[in-house]
Image 1 (cartoon, rainbow, N blue to C red):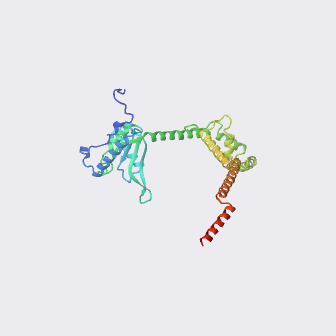
Image 2: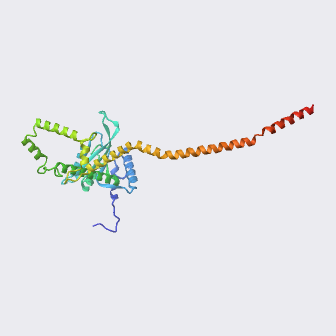
Image 3: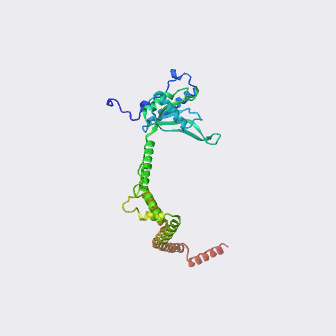
Length: 336
């Protein structure tokens, strides 16, 4: 029973120091400078990730560095299983998966991506993972004395783990629905009575399953279907329009396909109605434009009359111009 006086460690932070060695301790004797530097970087990377509360330490997944280039996933899995059996002879370890990280920018001689020397191994039991870590970490006999394996518990992102779990649940659910639709049990057992095998056997006994009859029936069915269906619609769309048969529930994939098709038809209708909608909008704006033109013409008339009146007021009359001319001529005559 857990001691309630101590805080709960939901992130398994007590495993953070597992696999680390002290640089001045006896375990560091014979370790190369490159490996010491790699261990420093790994510890700094782990500390940086664990500052984020979304990250936690997995109890069953291990991360291993310094993996040789000639070791693949199968060989890595065998190395870890053998390490657990050496440490616990009666144990029967089970590895869920073992994979390596590859660098596509560095191909090998065959043109395949080169291994980055980093791998992940996940056990189904924490005790087996801990035994593998303590058996292989810093062991000079595993790979080479100059490149010893650096093994530690992997740091996981809780958000990515939840996302992967939801994806797996969706895939399992879709597989179960497909199995149910085919008449199989969820574990892939025998078909239900009266399923596809029984129908096939019945058709063969009646002679419908022979090649000429099958070809004739298929051609007749195609002609009947082509004559009855409207142009531009295929069989899958017709099946979606009809919906599931009576007594059978619609699966999630069928609902998704129906919703996708309805959305496509809605977009198609909207694109077809777009020109008519623009015409209706233009027609609704025409009275407003006509009224604006009338107002503009009236304003132009008023402005023109005003400018004409101002010009007439500023221009002197003809009689005044004649009197002024006579006065100027007399003044010039008297000057002589």
